[in-house]
Length: 138
Image (tube, rainbow, N blue to C red; front, side, top):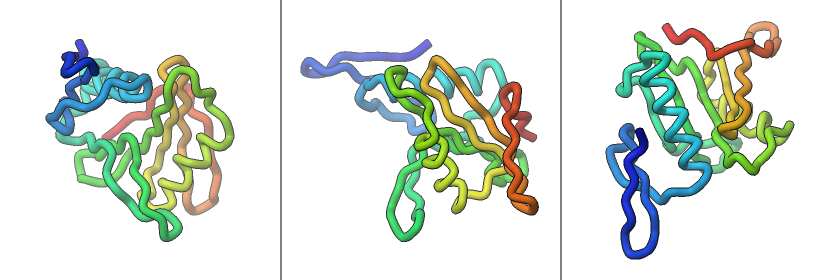
């Protein structure tokens, strides 16, 4: 269940990972629902999830949406979230791919809340494989 509140005419949603109230946007709603899915359905501990942290990509400061760490503390999954009105295009895939050049996750994902795509990355062969389901995080 997403916690919401209204403050001075604007709606906010509580982010359980960052432990703070953030502006309720369509993209934020997708991000928060995806976080709930990972915690409740996939049993990923909240402590293994990182949200909107800065990284440097090609010399530019960027922020990823979601990073999931495995039990060893290694980056296991990078997810880019978009609002439901934003189609998942090649540009969206390239965005998460560019973030992953720095993060080096073996899997990446994109979602707009309506459709989700996950890809396994083999860095040795540069092969990218579309996965049928949410990846296993060990």
